[in-house]
Image 1 (cartoon, rainbow over the protein chains, first blue to last red):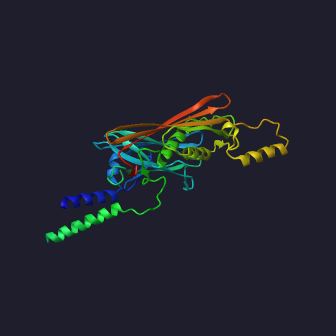
Image 2: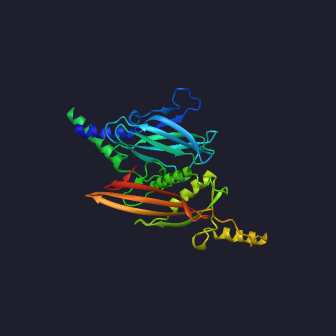
Image 3: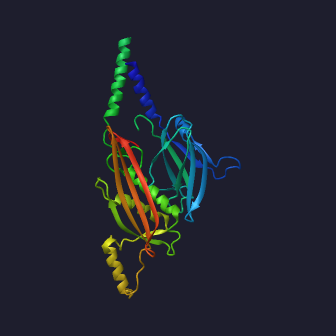
Length: 139
Length: 200
């Protein structure tokens, strides 16, 4: 019986701890420092989706594109979910028609690349949101 | 002491089970991570995923930005649902239309449609009347620069109790000046499991 209680408690605790990690660019990053900041509220999630690199360019003449490299330090295959949020120059949120959470499988010690494109030419700022998808109640 | 502990454990487990089992109806974020994932039909998040990826691919290709007419006019041609799931293909196409319109490089024609049937007959009638009244009805109207066709396919397989279904979203963009496809995209969404579940 205590074992059942432990499992139930652990399940409940894990489901309650699925907090989000966020990545935002740093516009005035000093030379030699990463041009992004990771806001980590979930260390477990960060261990399987640590952002190691961010690249930005412009496609179609005026649409910002961002590419991030995510590294998993885990020894087993993992799943994460992510979505990009876009903002205009004033920091106002721009809602895209199809922007939704996307699931990505990441193998042990693998670096995956995810890409986002601003939905409008006015989308100049971005934010990446990361969530865990390996939890018992959300799988 | 032991009976108190057992009572506490039993109460806790019962409370937890009740919390987990009895979920009252509520509204959730359609783009969020709580939507139901099914194994045998195209879910709302599948449309979101496919539309997002296909629009990204179309945008990166730069076909609209290179069009001599800016913004380019896009006509929606044949959209085929070849899956066993009955759904309105606008669940996919509308998302793509909105996303393309947001880029500012494309406008969607609602007065030209497949088989000469306009999507918006009232707009077509008004446009024709305006052209007639302005004496431009004999002039060649601006035609669509591109047409979009799409097909959604299904591939199902199972191993024991586990079912796997792939929905394949194929799309082609044709330049109406040349009649040749200038962009093609394919996005596959594969789902595996024994039963529907909440979440990704």
